[in-house]
Length: 275
Image (cartoon, rainbow, N blue to C red; front, side, top):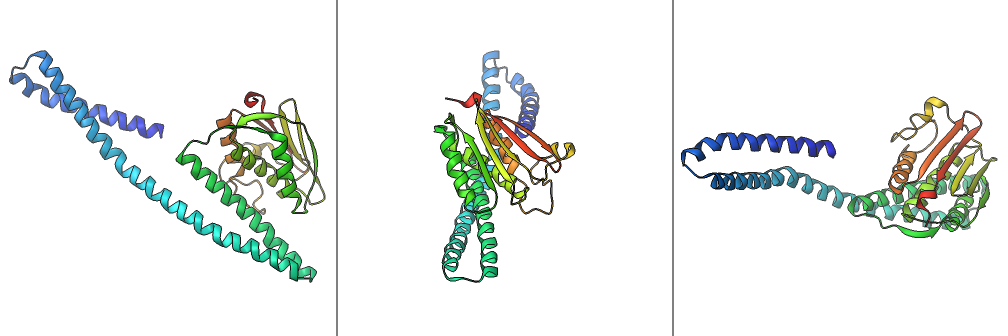
């Protein structure tokens, strides 16, 4: 966006100077005084500026409005089959007794949970682009306990929680999605029998897994959108990109340490957003 504005400003100034250089000799021939000449040039600048802005930004605004409307429609349509999958899955669980079928159904359930998370991220991202998200005060402990209970329902990894009350002022929905992303990654890249650790001490929130870890080379690319350290794992590779974007906006410092076959430790410094 900055590059577009700079380019547009350069083109505008260039065309203004060209217009002034072309018109100035004719104005002189009419023998106007200096004040009249300045008024005429000022009107030319303002008039051309208005026309330039309309020509430059109207098509872009129309395109953005069309994309926003299209995206909202798509999001609405996505929510219907997602709700249907979850409802029918819950009904089938009550009637099925075959262990093999139940495992297959659980895989469908897990996939619908991941799809719901991506859906929520998409809705949140679009809403954030349309209008600023207001900050609110909330206790991190309540968020963590609530989200961890939801992840426990997947019956995959165990959790070790050591979090005291700590109130911050930030984008609450964004923080929930940040936490979900970090926990989901920890679970996705860990064995089922390992433990995910979540601790909060003196404004430092630490999430640690004992998974496959990452090399120093991989750590350099983890914030790139669509990057995945392990192509064999499911996912869209946008999680940490969104996490970094949120942290930058909310003045949260993030530090990631990882070693292959040992695990990953992510530390968030929340000191600057404490109430």
